[in-house]
Image (tube, rainbow over all chains, first blue to last red; front, top):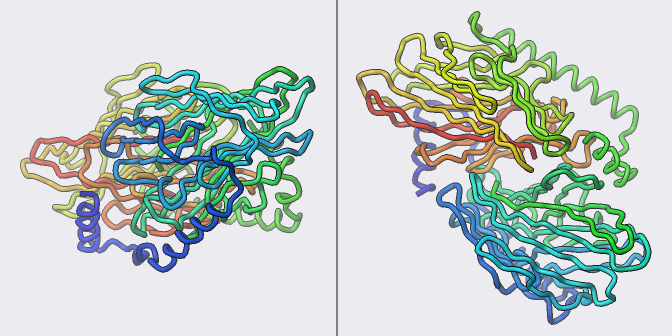
Length: 285
Length: 280
């Protein structure tokens, strides 16, 4: 329907003499095939344990038309499917990569689980603490017992709807620690691999421009009052950042036409036995 | 918020330290951009009604959840600050507002605040509450009435909802473009990045800059037949019947953005579209 409307509007614009640049072509099939193959190879060669999964366990949906959202959460708390609006999928394309990472800055030890992009093989099993029609709460402790990450992923209905993710990180050790907490998504906007990427202090986003086909995207937002140093950025790779070296694949500026990804980082001091909470959200763009 | 941004930039370290010569160059560019804005505004048509004077201020939240904006008597949003300390509209020449193109006659009506106006009668305040203002305005030829309801939506991600109901007062069916436009100068900087998707138009500065914030305007309504999303190479508002718009990613540009709705109106009928502004 939207394509028909778009065609009609373009014709109308032309008839009224509107001055616009020539529309960009759609995604290059050859480039898309190369990107798909690269994602598959990267996923196959990524570090990971048998517990790294992209299988949908908890599905949520809301709204209709431009205000629709559907997403899916794995048993480990990864969002491996994100469709907004209806018919426009941004994550479940090629390798399904989304998730979380931690760097214990005192010990320089990384813990991560990025679904198809692999995990660090140092997480314990995830447990479901609570499940409702609009949310799921998942708890997971690192295998060395030093950190526990509790995620509550909630469907925030509205115009537009969002997937809210509250991440509470507990320092189980007997000393204060500094930590970097990362949320990451391999965005393949509207089913295409090569997209635009960038970030601000409060957002990281991947999208296709209106002049091309598949002109949709998604944004990862910092939500609420955040007292920690943080920021969003785009990566020029489709796999997740190393939590202890997270800026290797970004130049903190706009990148166009690449198979990239988005991330938001927080740098936090956590007292012994204490917790720190950050909140992010995904929504369509 | 500025403190957080500063800490962030310090965390990122030397990657973001601009050389003094680059800073001087950027300042010169900013001055030139603001001068160009003023020149463009001076050359645009203006009636005595065009104003950038704040009439209805709204604010909610603190820090990162802070949103403050101001609406003129004519229904333009001439100040928009989110999060706290980060202004996106009240910079240089202030441009925000609405435009209508009547397909039947190819007549344009617009009010872009500092970037001029054309074809509108006096605005009438219909209703005012602590969180919203409703303003109605009819074109001088009496053909269209635009009723805007601008509402503050508080929360952890606050936004502004703009509901625009366009009524065809004439005795014949009409098709029209209805445009919402804003000259974004993200975080007080004239030179920003701009792009659009099918549902959103957005302007921002990358995290690697010293002003890593932005603003998105997004369609959230089902009422319009179709939308077009706009980015422009210019800060001034578009000719409603002949907008020069860009289809690609723009970087380091003093541009503007907007949403364009195609509205089909039977005689005496009205259609409502819903747009939001939110920080990014």
